[in-house]
Amino acid sequence: MNLISIENIYVNYGAKTVLHGVDLSIDEGEIVTIVGPNGSGKTSLLRAIIGATSLQKGKITLKDNLKMGYVPQRLNFDSSLPMTVERFMHLSNNINKKECFNALEKAGAPNIFKSQISQLSGGQFQRVLLARAIIDKPDILLLDEATQGLDQPGSALFYKQIEEVRRETNCAVLMISHDLHVVMSTSDRVICLNGHVCCSGTPANVASDPEYKAMFGAGTEGTLALYQHQHGHDHRDKELEHNA
Image 1 (cartoon, rainbow, N blue to C red):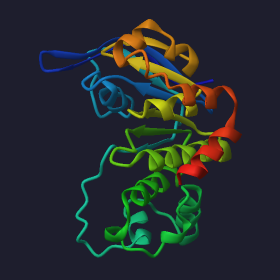
Image 2: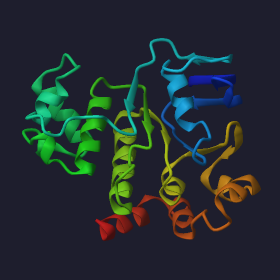
Image 3: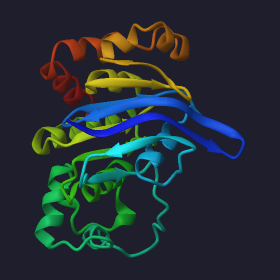
Image 4: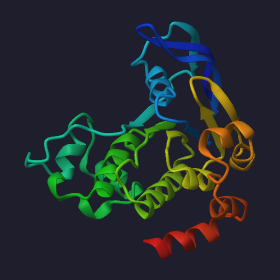
């Protein structure tokens, strides 16, 4: 069943058209990643889905009572504020202590419940944002380059945690990423965007598409990542443990 259906949407910022003729849908339980160069409209697409950006044309249809969780690219936060993770988790959610802890556990960060936000690493803070996004048990997670600023092993481990969340909750995941190699080993489907949908499909199919190669270079499909995608999770888990 489609959670989100996008039909022929156009988005303008002033006189500039950033999205034109975009069609796509997101189904229950799948991980879909959007890739594309800077300025290709990736963030504008997510903003349109959550209702933060208006459409000039087309329509976006959401499943009835669809619950969305959102992890932003960055969060402007005064790190000097004396605030624990527990307090931060309660800022905009009417939840109890057990629910907070369970969400942090699912996000892979159960041991930082009492930690000061100012003392967290970049990866730990992203896991806190992930915990806030999943605490209301969403049908779909939206992630806007949530690993920006993390190193490659940190990004890989974060994406592994996203897979765990999907496996435990069966929520769909729609994410923007610039980590092409990790994307190819994590996603069920990849959408290549450059103002419009250039190509889409399984990671292996997109990596071999001429438009994808023209956009990112012929070598960016990543031999290791494709091997991992084709040979299942066991090989990928060993690689992640080696990099951790």
